[in-house]
Length: 257
Image 1 (tube, rainbow, N blue to C red):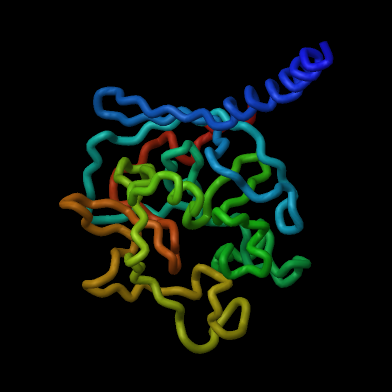
Image 2 (spheres, rainbow, N blue to C red):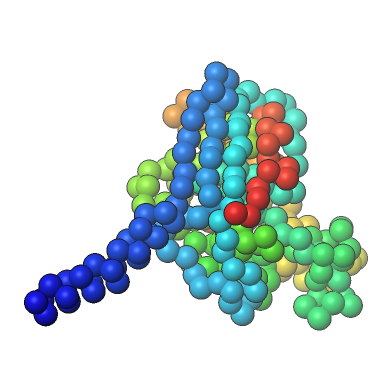
């Protein structure tokens, strides 16, 4: 009798945990004529760092994400600069490389949302990196967990180079040997936050580019087709796109649920 009671107690104790774990990550891909669509709750299918943390005061919350991109993307001759969401990973988590911080000498941390727009901070150049976890991700004000760089746990889980799609429909890949054509400037800044170019700001870098490196949007040919790459060096995640960017991205279509 005692064994039966003990078994029943264990069942009650662990069943909710199993059900909750099964509901953590929700991600679906569907094809609609000329579109590839993604439906996600924004929760990753891997472990994350602890949030809130010292550098990030936000808690992870489920999102209602539904975005579509061109199924047959076409590369144009001109690129489009992207300030917000650049794409989506193959687990439904969004890539958002830029921050909302700008040089602000009056702010306690030296940067703020209302700072000088000519000097935008790069998260990897900041002390504490705004609480990034081991997946180069953290949480926004609305509770959205998002990647600023290589999603390490996802790459290990997928065990392939293809890890997502950009907002214009081109694939996003990661290959360790791929390096961007962006380079840190030498010398001292002539205006703004005076001091040596140290990578604190995106404007500390310039696109040098060589035949052996990627284009300004971290794009290049792979297996006979144009794709974007996540790189281990700046900018890590593309900051511009060469195709027609879906209007679904960077719109108010990501809601907390």
